[in-house]
Structures are given as structure tokens and as C-alpha cells.
Image 1 (cartoon, rainbow over the protein chains, first blue to last red):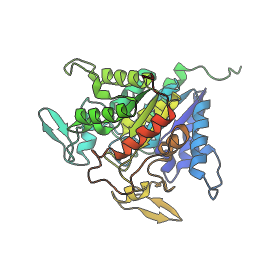
Image 2 (cartoon, one colour):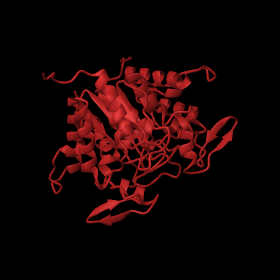
Image 3 (cartoon, rainbow over the protein chains, first blue to last red):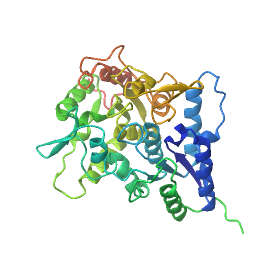
Image 4 (tube, each protein chain N blue to C red):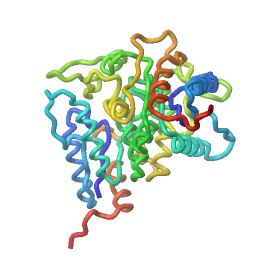
Length: 188
Length: 188
């Protein structure tokens, strides 16, 4: 069972180490984690970003499932690249899992970043745009993609001390994946 | 030719009217635009957000292409729900098109929302997270999904006076889609 490990983890200063920790957790549960930074690139070569895209897409095509880190990144929603990958895997009919180390609902995340006002029972942000108010953690497409194409979003009861390095919610996803998917090879 | 019209347009105060304008542009080019707000829901019914998800997914499954409004929404990246839908359509092997009414590259969008500093030739945001610096408009997964699964992102030379209502870049996408896809039925 190959699982694609998506998330803005790749943008952290210790991105490689986080990938290793996630892969070790996968291995403990009989799964193999595929992490974008496993691939090697010539950073000076032209077309680097396209090579990274193709590499990530090839990993997703090999994988049977995705575990997406959907912790808010540079705004109230999850990282855009990660969300794209979640959609891609759902479109491919793969098993979708995800976690979020921010337990706040979306409306509160938006409110924490700017004024939110109610008019006629509908919430609006400072630009006058409607704020989705379904009690979900993020845009409904993300929340229900997990519900309906895999397992409901995993969130901690309260925000971990270090949301970018606490892997308890990630490990909960790995356990769910292991229960749903047979190991690639049974060794005796 | 059915095209799914994705975007945070659905969160604008005049969301229904924008959908009608987009559908009229599609019709002028021989295409049919499917807009999320075409569906009708009982707002008081339980499970409303899930019903919206299922409706959007059904529209995407019927469509042969997506035109995504990828103008930044509540942060430096595109709307999360829209990005999910772009990924879903790419995963389904459908034709992917998109536009963005903010012509700035991603690094400048991040810099406009907080301090960005260079260390050892790599850009970091105020949280110490790496900022992708490929000269692209958004996360590389979004930019190259369009390049490789459809048509390159359409952006105006300069930001329109009203980025949420200017549909010139949208119409450019419609023309590209019409050139790539046969009409559903040829009428003489």
C-alpha cells in the first residue's frame, strides 16, 4: 500500500526530516509513504517547477491513497498545492484522508484574520464576500471529499503546541488507511 | 460541450448574476456553462453542505472541461474549493482551463501580505516557511496542471479595475475551450 504524503510540510525548514518521520510512521503500520522530496532534481536545470509537478503527479498515480496535511497555510484554508492534490486523487478514485492541526471551524479562522459581520443571517468578510458557515473546518469541497471519498477529517481537540511538527493526527490517518487498505505484500 | 464554471464567484453578493453573465459568454461561443448555483437546495434541510458537494461533483462529472477563476481569495492563493475542483477535473482527465485577474507572481502576492526575506538564495515568509519562487502565479501544482492538462493560465497585463466582475480573461478561456472542444450538437 503506497500512500502519497501531501502537505505544506515541504515548505518547512526541516522538510526532509518531517518526511522521514512520516514515512517511519507509515512503515510501523505496514504502509509505504511517498513524499515529494524523495525525488531528486537539478535545481539549476530549466523547467524545474514542471519537473517537480510531473514527479508529484507520477507519485500520486502510483499511490492508492493520499494523506493530506490540511492545516491552514498563509490564510484560513489549507495549502493550495495540497488541496489540488486532494482533488486530483479524488478524481482518480483513490482513498482520501486528511488532517488539520487547527481545530477551529472555518468561520472562526476567517474572523481571526479580519472582520466578519452578519447581514440577514449570512456572514460576510471585510471585502463583502460570503463566508461559508456550515461548521466545517474548511471549504465544503475539502471537508466532504474526505467524508465521501475516504475518511472524515482528523483534527485534535485543541491546537498542538507545535502544529507543524505534531504528527498525532497524521498517525491517526495512517491507522485509518491501514485498516482500509491491504498491505502491498504479506510477509511471513 | 459542457464546461464547469468554478470560482469564488459563488461567494460574491451578486453571485447569481455573475453566473448568468458567464453562461451567456459560453453560449455565444457554442458552449454550455454549468454553474454551481444552478442547483436548488432547501437551505433549511439537514446535510445542506453535503448536498451542495454532491451537486457540484455531479456537474463536474457531466462536464468535459473546467474554467476556474483562480484570482487570489482570502490569501495569496486561489480559493480552496476552486483549487480542489481543478484537481478533481485533472484527475478525471478533463480539459483544464483557468484565469486569474491578479497579474502578480506568487512571491509578490505573499510579500504584499507580510514580510518576505531571502536567506541563502531562498525566500521565506514571516513564519520561516519557504516561498515558492518559480515566477509562477500560484503554487506550481496549479500552474502546471493548466499547462499540461489544458491551456496555460490566462492573466491580464494589469489588474482590471474590478477583478471580481471583469470577465475578459474568462472569455479568453472560453475561446480556447471552444477551439479545443467540438460543440455538443451542430445545428444548421
